[in-house]
Length: 106
Image (spheres, rainbow, N blue to C red):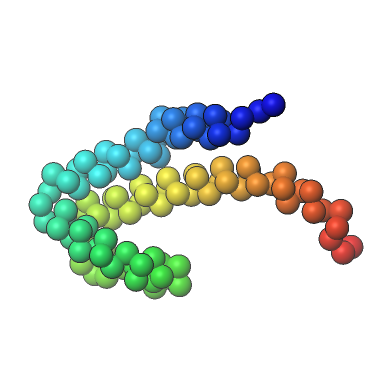
């Protein structure tokens, strides 16, 4: 029998070897080394829910965030990583959706 948790743990290790993960890690290290960027990130983190809601509704980020290269880079890298995770999740859940195909009205 397959232990899906072993596979999930291996996937977590594999995730850390992807370019998207490495790019985000490097971007975060760069951000930590710039006090003004780190301060802005920490303030942004407190408003994360508000920012996510704005992004999800298509509203632009604040001018201060848009003008900070390190923060913009981190957000871009983070979005790329989460897009990859979303793609993997869709691939993993496709067999479940396929189970229901015969039940759908034609």
